[in-house]
Length: 577
Image (cartoon, rainbow, N blue to C red; front, side, top):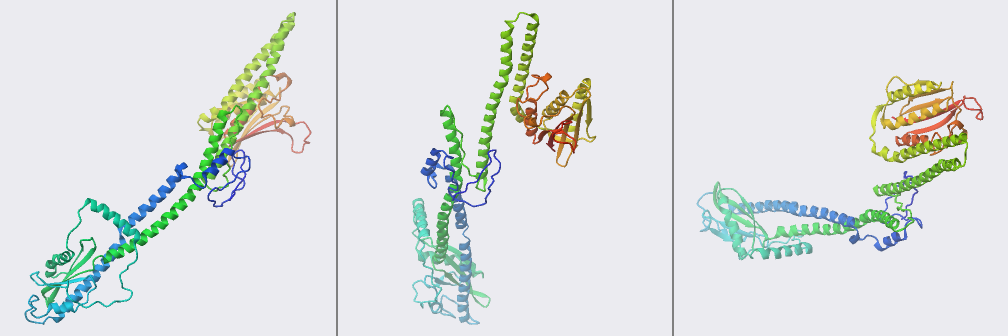
Protein backbone atom coordinates (compact mmCIF):
# COMPACT_ATOMS: atom_id res chain seq x y z
CA UNK A 1 0.00 0.00 0.00
CA UNK A 2 1.16 3.53 -0.73
CA UNK A 3 0.47 6.39 1.61
CA UNK A 4 2.13 9.65 0.58
CA UNK A 5 1.08 12.96 2.05
CA UNK A 6 2.52 16.43 1.69
CA UNK A 7 4.56 17.98 4.40
CA UNK A 8 5.30 21.63 4.80
CA UNK A 9 8.94 22.56 4.28
CA UNK A 10 8.92 24.26 7.64
CA UNK A 11 8.05 21.04 9.46
CA UNK A 12 4.38 21.72 10.06
CA UNK A 13 1.78 19.01 10.33
CA UNK A 14 0.90 16.94 7.35
CA UNK A 15 -1.88 18.33 5.21
CA UNK A 16 -3.34 14.94 4.53
CA UNK A 17 -3.49 13.13 7.85
CA UNK A 18 -4.95 9.63 7.54
CA UNK A 19 -5.70 7.03 10.18
CA UNK A 20 -5.06 3.95 8.04
CA UNK A 21 -3.42 0.95 9.66
CA UNK A 22 -0.63 0.00 7.28
CA UNK A 23 1.67 -2.99 7.58
CA UNK A 24 5.03 -3.72 6.02
CA UNK A 25 6.63 -1.29 3.58
CA UNK A 26 3.87 1.27 3.90
CA UNK A 27 5.19 4.16 1.87
CA UNK A 28 6.48 4.80 -1.61
CA UNK A 29 8.38 7.97 -2.39
CA UNK A 30 8.28 9.72 -5.72
CA UNK A 31 11.03 9.09 -8.22
CA UNK A 32 14.15 11.03 -7.37
CA UNK A 33 13.17 11.73 -3.78
CA UNK A 34 15.02 8.80 -2.25
CA UNK A 35 18.61 8.07 -3.16
CA UNK A 36 19.23 5.07 -5.37
CA UNK A 37 21.43 3.55 -2.65
CA UNK A 38 18.49 3.65 -0.24
CA UNK A 39 16.23 1.95 -2.77
CA UNK A 40 18.83 -0.74 -3.43
CA UNK A 41 19.29 -1.37 0.26
CA UNK A 42 15.52 -1.67 0.79
CA UNK A 43 15.16 -4.16 -2.07
CA UNK A 44 18.08 -6.20 -0.81
CA UNK A 45 16.70 -6.27 2.69
CA UNK A 46 13.32 -7.70 1.69
CA UNK A 47 10.40 -7.99 4.09
CA UNK A 48 12.46 -8.25 7.25
CA UNK A 49 16.10 -9.06 7.87
CA UNK A 50 16.74 -10.35 11.37
CA UNK A 51 20.50 -10.47 11.00
CA UNK A 52 20.54 -6.75 10.15
CA UNK A 53 17.88 -5.55 12.55
CA UNK A 54 18.64 -5.76 16.28
CA UNK A 55 15.29 -4.11 16.96
CA UNK A 56 13.42 -6.83 15.06
CA UNK A 57 15.29 -9.51 16.99
CA UNK A 58 14.40 -7.82 20.26
CA UNK A 59 10.71 -7.61 19.34
CA UNK A 60 10.56 -11.32 18.46
CA UNK A 61 12.63 -12.35 21.49
CA UNK A 62 10.53 -10.41 23.99
CA UNK A 63 7.28 -11.66 22.49
CA UNK A 64 8.52 -15.25 22.70
CA UNK A 65 9.76 -14.75 26.25
CA UNK A 66 6.36 -13.44 27.30
CA UNK A 67 4.66 -16.47 25.71
CA UNK A 68 7.11 -18.92 27.30
CA UNK A 69 6.69 -17.38 30.75
CA UNK A 70 2.90 -17.57 30.40
CA UNK A 71 2.88 -21.25 29.38
CA UNK A 72 5.56 -22.18 31.91
CA UNK A 73 3.49 -20.54 34.62
CA UNK A 74 0.40 -22.48 33.60
CA UNK A 75 2.29 -25.78 33.53
CA UNK A 76 4.09 -25.05 36.79
CA UNK A 77 0.98 -24.04 38.71
CA UNK A 78 -0.81 -27.04 37.18
CA UNK A 79 -4.37 -26.01 38.20
CA UNK A 80 -6.08 -28.74 36.14
CA UNK A 81 -4.01 -31.48 37.82
CA UNK A 82 -4.88 -30.23 41.28
CA UNK A 83 -8.55 -30.22 40.34
CA UNK A 84 -8.36 -33.73 38.89
CA UNK A 85 -6.50 -35.06 41.95
CA UNK A 86 -9.11 -33.62 44.30
CA UNK A 87 -11.93 -35.12 42.27
CA UNK A 88 -10.23 -38.53 42.04
CA UNK A 89 -9.46 -38.63 45.75
CA UNK A 90 -13.06 -37.74 46.57
CA UNK A 91 -14.34 -40.47 44.25
CA UNK A 92 -11.93 -43.05 45.66
CA UNK A 93 -12.99 -42.18 49.23
CA UNK A 94 -16.58 -42.79 48.23
CA UNK A 95 -15.62 -46.15 46.64
CA UNK A 96 -13.71 -47.23 49.75
CA UNK A 97 -16.58 -46.29 52.04
CA UNK A 98 -19.05 -48.19 49.84
CA UNK A 99 -16.78 -51.29 50.00
CA UNK A 100 -16.61 -50.92 53.79
CA UNK A 101 -20.39 -50.64 53.87
CA UNK A 102 -20.62 -53.92 51.90
CA UNK A 103 -18.54 -55.67 54.57
CA UNK A 104 -20.45 -54.00 57.40
CA UNK A 105 -23.77 -55.12 55.91
CA UNK A 106 -22.69 -58.78 56.17
CA UNK A 107 -21.48 -58.54 59.76
CA UNK A 108 -23.72 -59.94 62.54
CA UNK A 109 -25.34 -57.39 64.76
CA UNK A 110 -23.89 -59.04 67.83
CA UNK A 111 -21.21 -61.55 68.54
CA UNK A 112 -17.53 -61.77 67.94
CA UNK A 113 -16.04 -60.91 64.51
CA UNK A 114 -12.59 -61.97 63.35
CA UNK A 115 -11.70 -61.27 59.76
CA UNK A 116 -8.53 -63.36 59.89
CA UNK A 117 -10.44 -66.55 60.84
CA UNK A 118 -13.55 -65.66 58.79
CA UNK A 119 -15.49 -65.56 62.06
CA UNK A 120 -18.79 -63.76 61.37
CA UNK A 121 -17.99 -63.01 57.70
CA UNK A 122 -16.12 -64.52 54.78
CA UNK A 123 -13.89 -61.61 53.65
CA UNK A 124 -12.41 -63.43 50.64
CA UNK A 125 -15.77 -64.30 49.18
CA UNK A 126 -17.04 -60.80 49.79
CA UNK A 127 -13.96 -59.27 48.16
CA UNK A 128 -14.29 -61.51 45.13
CA UNK A 129 -17.81 -60.22 44.57
CA UNK A 130 -16.72 -56.59 44.39
CA UNK A 131 -16.05 -55.18 40.93
CA UNK A 132 -13.01 -52.94 40.69
CA UNK A 133 -11.58 -51.09 37.69
CA UNK A 134 -8.79 -52.89 35.94
CA UNK A 135 -5.57 -51.99 37.71
CA UNK A 136 -7.23 -50.97 40.99
CA UNK A 137 -6.55 -53.12 44.05
CA UNK A 138 -8.41 -53.94 47.30
CA UNK A 139 -6.76 -54.84 50.60
CA UNK A 140 -8.52 -55.94 53.83
CA UNK A 141 -6.66 -55.73 57.13
CA UNK A 142 -7.69 -56.98 60.58
CA UNK A 143 -7.25 -54.96 63.81
CA UNK A 144 -3.71 -56.34 64.18
CA UNK A 145 -2.78 -54.72 60.83
CA UNK A 146 -2.37 -58.17 59.25
CA UNK A 147 -3.32 -58.48 55.60
CA UNK A 148 -6.43 -60.66 55.33
CA UNK A 149 -7.45 -60.21 51.70
CA UNK A 150 -5.57 -58.92 48.67
CA UNK A 151 -7.11 -58.57 45.25
CA UNK A 152 -3.72 -59.05 43.64
CA UNK A 153 -3.87 -62.31 41.69
CA UNK A 154 -7.46 -62.93 42.75
CA UNK A 155 -10.07 -64.10 40.29
CA UNK A 156 -12.63 -61.36 40.26
CA UNK A 157 -15.45 -60.33 37.95
CA UNK A 158 -14.54 -58.23 34.96
CA UNK A 159 -15.92 -54.72 35.36
CA UNK A 160 -18.72 -53.70 33.05
CA UNK A 161 -17.67 -51.35 30.26
CA UNK A 162 -19.59 -48.06 30.29
CA UNK A 163 -19.57 -46.10 27.06
CA UNK A 164 -18.05 -42.66 27.43
CA UNK A 165 -16.02 -43.54 30.56
CA UNK A 166 -13.08 -45.21 28.85
CA UNK A 167 -9.61 -43.87 29.59
CA UNK A 168 -8.48 -41.11 27.28
CA UNK A 169 -5.91 -42.65 24.93
CA UNK A 170 -5.31 -39.59 22.79
CA UNK A 171 -1.81 -39.09 21.44
CA UNK A 172 0.42 -36.78 23.45
CA UNK A 173 3.46 -36.44 21.19
CA UNK A 174 4.74 -33.12 22.54
CA UNK A 175 4.24 -34.03 26.19
CA UNK A 176 5.76 -37.50 25.77
CA UNK A 177 8.76 -36.04 23.98
CA UNK A 178 9.33 -33.52 26.76
CA UNK A 179 8.85 -36.28 29.35
CA UNK A 180 11.44 -38.45 27.63
CA UNK A 181 13.88 -35.58 27.57
CA UNK A 182 13.27 -35.01 31.27
CA UNK A 183 13.63 -38.75 32.03
CA UNK A 184 16.89 -38.89 30.10
CA UNK A 185 18.25 -36.00 32.12
CA UNK A 186 16.95 -37.49 35.38
CA UNK A 187 18.45 -40.92 34.61
CA UNK A 188 21.87 -39.34 34.40
CA UNK A 189 21.44 -37.72 37.80
CA UNK A 190 19.59 -40.43 39.77
CA UNK A 191 19.66 -44.29 39.74
CA UNK A 192 16.68 -46.17 38.36
CA UNK A 193 14.18 -47.49 40.96
CA UNK A 194 13.96 -51.28 41.46
CA UNK A 195 10.87 -51.35 43.69
CA UNK A 196 8.34 -54.10 42.93
CA UNK A 197 5.10 -52.32 42.04
CA UNK A 198 2.95 -54.94 43.83
CA UNK A 199 4.85 -54.50 47.06
CA UNK A 200 4.78 -50.79 46.59
CA UNK A 201 0.97 -50.85 46.29
CA UNK A 202 0.55 -53.06 49.40
CA UNK A 203 2.97 -50.91 51.34
CA UNK A 204 1.03 -47.78 50.41
CA UNK A 205 -2.14 -49.36 51.77
CA UNK A 206 -0.43 -50.68 54.91
CA UNK A 207 0.91 -47.22 55.78
CA UNK A 208 -2.68 -45.99 56.20
CA UNK A 209 -4.01 -48.88 58.33
CA UNK A 210 -3.02 -47.43 61.69
CA UNK A 211 -4.88 -44.19 61.06
CA UNK A 212 -7.94 -46.02 59.75
CA UNK A 213 -8.05 -48.33 62.84
CA UNK A 214 -8.27 -45.14 64.89
CA UNK A 215 -11.59 -44.50 63.18
CA UNK A 216 -10.64 -41.93 60.49
CA UNK A 217 -10.59 -42.39 56.72
CA UNK A 218 -7.07 -41.84 55.35
CA UNK A 219 -6.08 -40.60 51.90
CA UNK A 220 -2.58 -40.49 50.40
CA UNK A 221 -1.00 -40.04 46.97
CA UNK A 222 2.08 -42.05 46.06
CA UNK A 223 4.00 -43.23 43.00
CA UNK A 224 4.96 -46.62 41.70
CA UNK A 225 8.36 -47.63 40.32
CA UNK A 226 7.64 -45.93 36.97
CA UNK A 227 6.65 -42.69 38.62
CA UNK A 228 2.92 -43.06 37.90
CA UNK A 229 0.61 -41.56 40.52
CA UNK A 230 -1.41 -43.95 42.69
CA UNK A 231 -4.11 -42.83 45.12
CA UNK A 232 -4.69 -44.89 48.24
CA UNK A 233 -7.70 -44.68 50.60
CA UNK A 234 -8.10 -46.65 53.84
CA UNK A 235 -11.40 -46.56 55.71
CA UNK A 236 -12.51 -48.46 58.87
CA UNK A 237 -14.97 -51.41 58.83
CA UNK A 238 -17.20 -51.08 61.89
CA UNK A 239 -19.46 -53.42 63.81
CA UNK A 240 -21.57 -50.87 65.49
CA UNK A 241 -19.02 -48.55 67.04
CA UNK A 242 -16.17 -51.06 67.09
CA UNK A 243 -13.58 -51.10 64.31
CA UNK A 244 -13.11 -54.70 63.22
CA UNK A 245 -10.98 -54.13 60.16
CA UNK A 246 -9.79 -51.76 57.44
CA UNK A 247 -10.68 -51.67 53.75
CA UNK A 248 -7.92 -50.08 51.61
CA UNK A 249 -8.35 -49.29 47.92
CA UNK A 250 -5.64 -48.19 45.51
CA UNK A 251 -6.43 -46.50 42.21
CA UNK A 252 -5.25 -47.44 38.76
CA UNK A 253 -1.65 -46.34 38.34
CA UNK A 254 -1.24 -43.33 36.04
CA UNK A 255 -4.89 -42.61 35.31
CA UNK A 256 -4.55 -39.03 36.51
CA UNK A 257 -1.16 -38.67 34.81
CA UNK A 258 -2.71 -39.66 31.51
CA UNK A 259 -5.48 -37.08 31.90
CA UNK A 260 -2.91 -34.47 32.88
CA UNK A 261 -0.79 -35.37 29.86
CA UNK A 262 -3.80 -34.90 27.62
CA UNK A 263 -4.52 -31.50 29.15
CA UNK A 264 -0.86 -30.49 28.91
CA UNK A 265 -0.76 -31.68 25.32
CA UNK A 266 -3.65 -29.38 24.47
CA UNK A 267 -1.93 -26.46 26.23
CA UNK A 268 1.33 -27.17 24.42
CA UNK A 269 -0.45 -27.49 21.07
CA UNK A 270 -2.04 -24.10 21.68
CA UNK A 271 1.39 -22.84 22.72
CA UNK A 272 2.97 -24.05 19.47
CA UNK A 273 0.22 -22.40 17.45
CA UNK A 274 0.60 -19.24 19.53
CA UNK A 275 4.37 -19.29 18.97
CA UNK A 276 3.91 -19.51 15.21
CA UNK A 277 1.33 -16.72 15.24
CA UNK A 278 3.49 -14.64 17.59
CA UNK A 279 6.54 -15.00 15.36
CA UNK A 280 4.49 -14.06 12.30
CA UNK A 281 2.95 -11.02 14.00
CA UNK A 282 6.35 -10.06 15.41
CA UNK A 283 7.82 -10.13 11.92
CA UNK A 284 4.99 -7.95 10.64
CA UNK A 285 5.35 -5.61 13.61
CA UNK A 286 9.11 -5.49 13.18
CA UNK A 287 8.68 -4.68 9.49
CA UNK A 288 6.43 -1.74 10.33
CA UNK A 289 8.85 -0.42 12.97
CA UNK A 290 12.37 -1.60 12.22
CA UNK A 291 12.29 -1.16 8.45
CA UNK A 292 11.04 2.46 8.44
CA UNK A 293 13.49 3.38 11.21
CA UNK A 294 16.25 1.70 9.24
CA UNK A 295 15.27 3.75 6.17
CA UNK A 296 15.33 6.97 8.18
CA UNK A 297 18.76 6.16 9.61
CA UNK A 298 20.09 5.02 6.22
CA UNK A 299 18.88 8.23 4.54
CA UNK A 300 20.61 10.37 7.17
CA UNK A 301 23.81 8.30 6.93
CA UNK A 302 23.82 8.42 3.12
CA UNK A 303 23.46 12.19 3.21
CA UNK A 304 26.19 12.50 5.81
CA UNK A 305 28.64 10.26 3.95
CA UNK A 306 27.97 11.84 0.55
CA UNK A 307 28.32 15.38 1.85
CA UNK A 308 31.56 14.43 3.59
CA UNK A 309 33.06 13.10 0.34
CA UNK A 310 31.92 15.81 -2.09
CA UNK A 311 33.00 19.37 -2.53
CA UNK A 312 29.45 20.33 -3.51
CA UNK A 313 27.22 18.48 -1.02
CA UNK A 314 23.71 17.44 -1.93
CA UNK A 315 20.64 17.89 0.21
CA UNK A 316 19.86 15.16 2.71
CA UNK A 317 16.53 13.61 1.69
CA UNK A 318 14.54 12.06 4.54
CA UNK A 319 11.83 9.55 3.48
CA UNK A 320 8.31 10.90 3.85
CA UNK A 321 6.49 8.66 6.36
CA UNK A 322 4.13 11.33 7.63
CA UNK A 323 1.11 9.38 6.37
CA UNK A 324 1.66 6.91 9.22
CA UNK A 325 -0.60 7.81 12.18
CA UNK A 326 2.02 6.84 14.77
CA UNK A 327 5.30 7.94 16.34
CA UNK A 328 7.34 6.91 13.29
CA UNK A 329 5.25 9.26 11.16
CA UNK A 330 5.88 12.00 13.72
CA UNK A 331 9.60 11.21 13.72
CA UNK A 332 9.75 11.38 9.93
CA UNK A 333 7.93 14.71 9.92
CA UNK A 334 10.16 16.05 12.69
CA UNK A 335 13.34 14.96 10.88
CA UNK A 336 12.14 16.43 7.59
CA UNK A 337 11.22 19.66 9.33
CA UNK A 338 14.55 19.72 11.16
CA UNK A 339 16.51 19.16 7.94
CA UNK A 340 14.42 21.79 6.18
CA UNK A 341 15.00 24.27 9.01
CA UNK A 342 18.72 23.49 8.93
CA UNK A 343 18.94 24.20 5.21
CA UNK A 344 16.92 27.38 5.66
CA UNK A 345 19.37 28.45 8.34
CA UNK A 346 22.30 27.63 6.06
CA UNK A 347 20.73 29.57 3.19
CA UNK A 348 19.97 32.47 5.52
CA UNK A 349 23.58 32.52 6.69
CA UNK A 350 24.79 32.44 3.10
CA UNK A 351 22.45 35.28 2.21
CA UNK A 352 23.53 37.17 5.32
CA UNK A 353 27.17 36.75 4.37
CA UNK A 354 26.43 38.02 0.87
CA UNK A 355 24.53 41.01 2.27
CA UNK A 356 27.35 41.75 4.70
CA UNK A 357 29.88 41.68 1.86
CA UNK A 358 27.68 44.00 -0.19
CA UNK A 359 27.13 46.45 2.68
CA UNK A 360 30.80 46.59 3.57
CA UNK A 361 31.81 47.20 -0.05
CA UNK A 362 29.99 50.56 -0.16
CA UNK A 363 31.91 52.31 2.65
CA UNK A 364 35.12 50.58 1.54
CA UNK A 365 34.64 51.90 -1.98
CA UNK A 366 33.99 55.36 -0.57
CA UNK A 367 37.10 55.10 1.60
CA UNK A 368 39.22 53.97 -1.31
CA UNK A 369 37.99 56.84 -3.44
CA UNK A 370 38.55 59.36 -0.65
CA UNK A 371 42.06 58.11 0.08
CA UNK A 372 42.94 58.16 -3.60
CA UNK A 373 41.61 61.70 -3.96
CA UNK A 374 43.40 62.80 -0.79
CA UNK A 375 46.77 62.26 -2.47
CA UNK A 376 45.83 64.44 -5.40
CA UNK A 377 44.13 67.46 -3.82
CA UNK A 378 46.25 70.34 -2.61
CA UNK A 379 43.72 72.73 -1.13
CA UNK A 380 43.23 72.51 2.61
CA UNK A 381 39.48 72.83 2.32
CA UNK A 382 39.22 69.83 0.01
CA UNK A 383 41.53 67.79 2.23
CA UNK A 384 39.30 68.55 5.25
CA UNK A 385 36.23 67.45 3.34
CA UNK A 386 37.89 64.20 2.29
CA UNK A 387 39.02 63.58 5.87
CA UNK A 388 35.44 64.10 7.03
CA UNK A 389 34.28 61.53 4.46
CA UNK A 390 36.94 59.10 5.64
CA UNK A 391 35.96 59.62 9.27
CA UNK A 392 32.28 59.15 8.42
CA UNK A 393 32.98 55.96 6.48
CA UNK A 394 35.19 54.53 9.25
CA UNK A 395 32.51 55.19 11.86
CA UNK A 396 29.96 53.67 9.49
CA UNK A 397 32.12 50.56 9.09
CA UNK A 398 32.61 50.31 12.86
CA UNK A 399 28.87 50.61 13.46
CA UNK A 400 28.14 48.13 10.69
CA UNK A 401 30.62 45.54 12.00
CA UNK A 402 29.27 45.91 15.56
CA UNK A 403 25.69 45.44 14.41
CA UNK A 404 26.66 42.48 12.23
CA UNK A 405 28.45 40.88 15.17
CA UNK A 406 25.39 41.35 17.39
CA UNK A 407 23.07 39.96 14.72
CA UNK A 408 25.23 36.90 14.09
CA UNK A 409 25.34 36.03 17.82
CA UNK A 410 21.66 36.64 18.40
CA UNK A 411 20.40 33.11 17.58
CA UNK A 412 22.81 31.33 19.90
CA UNK A 413 22.28 33.87 22.68
CA UNK A 414 18.49 33.55 22.46
CA UNK A 415 18.85 29.79 22.95
CA UNK A 416 21.33 30.04 25.84
CA UNK A 417 19.53 32.69 27.90
CA UNK A 418 16.92 31.55 30.43
CA UNK A 419 13.43 33.02 30.25
CA UNK A 420 12.05 34.60 33.42
CA UNK A 421 8.82 36.27 34.48
CA UNK A 422 8.93 40.06 34.70
CA UNK A 423 6.63 43.07 34.89
CA UNK A 424 6.31 44.48 31.38
CA UNK A 425 4.69 47.71 32.66
CA UNK A 426 7.61 48.43 34.99
CA UNK A 427 10.18 47.72 32.27
CA UNK A 428 8.45 50.04 29.76
CA UNK A 429 8.04 52.67 32.46
CA UNK A 430 11.80 52.73 33.08
CA UNK A 431 12.54 52.92 29.32
CA UNK A 432 10.07 55.71 28.62
CA UNK A 433 11.33 57.70 31.61
CA UNK A 434 14.89 57.58 30.26
CA UNK A 435 14.16 57.96 26.54
CA UNK A 436 11.53 60.62 27.18
CA UNK A 437 14.22 63.00 28.40
CA UNK A 438 16.16 62.45 25.17
CA UNK A 439 13.04 63.22 23.13
CA UNK A 440 12.26 66.37 25.06
CA UNK A 441 15.84 67.61 24.58
CA UNK A 442 15.15 67.48 20.81
CA UNK A 443 11.85 69.34 21.13
CA UNK A 444 9.74 66.18 20.65
CA UNK A 445 6.74 65.63 22.90
CA UNK A 446 6.86 62.21 24.57
CA UNK A 447 3.63 60.58 25.79
CA UNK A 448 3.60 57.41 27.87
CA UNK A 449 0.23 55.68 28.33
CA UNK A 450 0.78 52.64 30.53
CA UNK A 451 -1.76 50.83 32.76
CA UNK A 452 -1.44 51.12 36.54
CA UNK A 453 -1.74 47.40 37.27
CA UNK A 454 1.28 45.18 36.53
CA UNK A 455 1.32 42.86 33.51
CA UNK A 456 3.59 39.86 34.02
CA UNK A 457 4.92 37.95 31.02
CA UNK A 458 7.64 35.30 30.59
CA UNK A 459 10.61 35.99 28.35
CA UNK A 460 14.04 37.58 28.07
CA UNK A 461 13.59 40.99 29.63
CA UNK A 462 16.87 42.39 28.33
CA UNK A 463 16.17 41.33 24.72
CA UNK A 464 12.64 42.70 24.72
CA UNK A 465 13.95 45.94 26.20
CA UNK A 466 16.36 46.08 23.24
CA UNK A 467 13.35 45.84 20.90
CA UNK A 468 11.43 48.67 22.53
CA UNK A 469 14.53 50.89 22.80
CA UNK A 470 15.11 50.43 19.08
CA UNK A 471 11.47 51.23 18.19
CA UNK A 472 11.33 54.30 20.44
CA UNK A 473 14.70 55.70 19.33
CA UNK A 474 13.71 55.14 15.68
CA UNK A 475 10.47 57.05 16.27
CA UNK A 476 12.36 59.92 17.91
CA UNK A 477 14.91 60.03 15.09
CA UNK A 478 12.17 60.55 12.49
CA UNK A 479 10.52 63.38 14.45
CA UNK A 480 11.33 67.07 14.29
CA UNK A 481 10.76 69.92 16.67
CA UNK A 482 7.04 69.98 17.54
CA UNK A 483 6.34 66.32 16.65
CA UNK A 484 5.22 63.77 19.24
CA UNK A 485 5.97 60.16 20.17
CA UNK A 486 3.44 58.05 22.05
CA UNK A 487 4.04 54.67 23.71
CA UNK A 488 1.00 52.81 24.98
CA UNK A 489 0.25 49.34 26.30
CA UNK A 490 -2.97 47.33 26.31
CA UNK A 491 -3.81 43.88 27.61
CA UNK A 492 -6.10 41.53 25.71
CA UNK A 493 -7.40 38.04 26.58
CA UNK A 494 -4.32 36.02 25.69
CA UNK A 495 -1.83 38.64 24.56
CA UNK A 496 -0.46 42.08 25.27
CA UNK A 497 0.04 44.85 22.68
CA UNK A 498 2.80 47.45 22.88
CA UNK A 499 2.41 50.29 20.38
CA UNK A 500 4.95 52.99 19.47
CA UNK A 501 3.52 55.88 17.42
CA UNK A 502 5.07 59.04 16.06
CA UNK A 503 3.92 62.03 14.03
CA UNK A 504 6.87 61.90 11.70
CA UNK A 505 6.78 61.55 7.89
CA UNK A 506 5.48 57.99 8.01
CA UNK A 507 6.67 55.02 6.00
CA UNK A 508 6.54 54.85 2.20
CA UNK A 509 3.90 52.30 1.20
CA UNK A 510 6.39 50.34 -0.90
CA UNK A 511 8.69 50.05 2.11
CA UNK A 512 6.17 48.64 4.62
CA UNK A 513 7.06 45.06 3.68
CA UNK A 514 10.81 45.72 3.42
CA UNK A 515 11.73 47.60 6.58
CA UNK A 516 12.15 44.38 8.60
CA UNK A 517 14.67 42.97 6.14
CA UNK A 518 18.35 43.02 6.98
CA UNK A 519 20.36 46.05 5.85
CA UNK A 520 17.26 47.80 4.54
CA UNK A 521 17.16 51.39 5.70
CA UNK A 522 14.69 54.15 4.84
CA UNK A 523 16.23 57.29 6.36
CA UNK A 524 16.12 61.02 5.72
CA UNK A 525 19.02 62.40 3.70
CA UNK A 526 20.74 63.92 6.71
CA UNK A 527 20.93 60.53 8.48
CA UNK A 528 22.54 58.58 5.65
CA UNK A 529 25.13 56.10 6.89
CA UNK A 530 24.23 56.51 10.56
CA UNK A 531 22.25 53.27 10.72
CA UNK A 532 23.14 49.77 9.53
CA UNK A 533 19.58 48.68 8.71
CA UNK A 534 19.77 45.74 11.15
CA UNK A 535 17.82 47.18 14.06
CA UNK A 536 14.30 46.26 12.90
CA UNK A 537 15.47 42.86 11.58
CA UNK A 538 16.96 42.05 14.99
CA UNK A 539 13.80 43.30 16.71
CA UNK A 540 11.63 41.08 14.53
CA UNK A 541 13.85 38.06 15.28
CA UNK A 542 13.63 38.67 19.05
CA UNK A 543 9.85 39.13 19.03
CA UNK A 544 9.26 35.98 16.96
CA UNK A 545 11.58 34.02 19.26
CA UNK A 546 9.12 34.91 22.06
CA UNK A 547 6.18 33.65 20.00
CA UNK A 548 5.01 37.18 19.20
CA UNK A 549 4.43 39.31 16.13
CA UNK A 550 5.56 42.75 15.00
CA UNK A 551 4.32 44.91 12.17
CA UNK A 552 4.40 48.50 10.93
CA UNK A 553 1.66 50.70 9.49
CA UNK A 554 0.96 54.31 8.67
CA UNK A 555 -1.41 56.43 10.71
CA UNK A 556 -4.30 57.83 8.71
CA UNK A 557 -7.76 59.16 9.62
CA UNK A 558 -10.52 56.57 9.23
CA UNK A 559 -12.11 58.31 6.22
CA UNK A 560 -8.91 59.57 4.63
CA UNK A 561 -7.84 58.76 1.08
CA UNK A 562 -5.22 55.99 0.94
CA UNK A 563 -3.14 58.16 -1.40
CA UNK A 564 -3.04 61.03 1.07
CA UNK A 565 0.05 61.70 3.15
CA UNK A 566 0.16 59.74 6.43
CA UNK A 567 -0.04 61.45 9.81
CA UNK A 568 2.79 59.33 11.17
CA UNK A 569 4.03 55.78 11.66
CA UNK A 570 2.92 53.07 14.09
CA UNK A 571 4.83 49.97 15.18
CA UNK A 572 2.86 47.25 17.00
CA UNK A 573 4.38 44.41 19.05
CA UNK A 574 2.11 41.57 20.16
CA UNK A 575 3.38 39.18 22.85
CA UNK A 576 1.64 36.12 24.31
CA UNK A 577 0.70 36.12 27.99
